[in-house]
Length: 171
Image 1 (cartoon, helix red, strand yellow):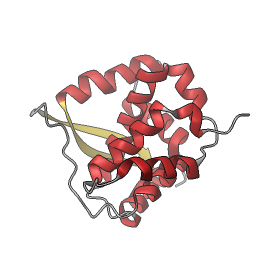
Image 2: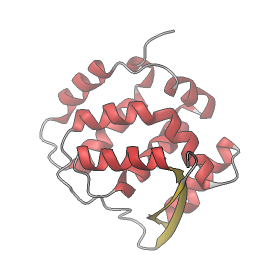
Image 3: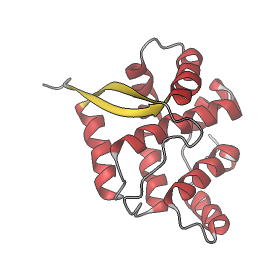
Image 4: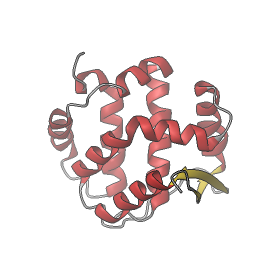
């Protein structure tokens, strides 16, 4: 049962579905959401764990799905057992409110990165090794009094996307 797939259910806002997910499907030229997520997950799997470690204990804090759009949609994703278990492990290790928040974080991380650097540019940057110590130091310098976990995640991801070339090793 190597290729066992889990049907993973989560909620997104209508605007995230129509603007973010549809945009990424078109940019990546991929037909299914499951295939898109699997592609994105493979690219950030090791980096996401390191970024979550910078934030540390997420205190099981609820992350608002979208404060500008009240309409919620059910999304389903077929992911491999190993990917499912990895997300589940992060959920446990970092005390996140739910596994779905990690899925939404990855989707938004790619959306913001592609919007900033273009698909090719962002894929090139994501493919490079991350200078996690530099990112952590810059994050801690800017964080000051941010106690809200969602605000910390947004700051960390925005900092990385905005300055991605500074945080990768040149190859």
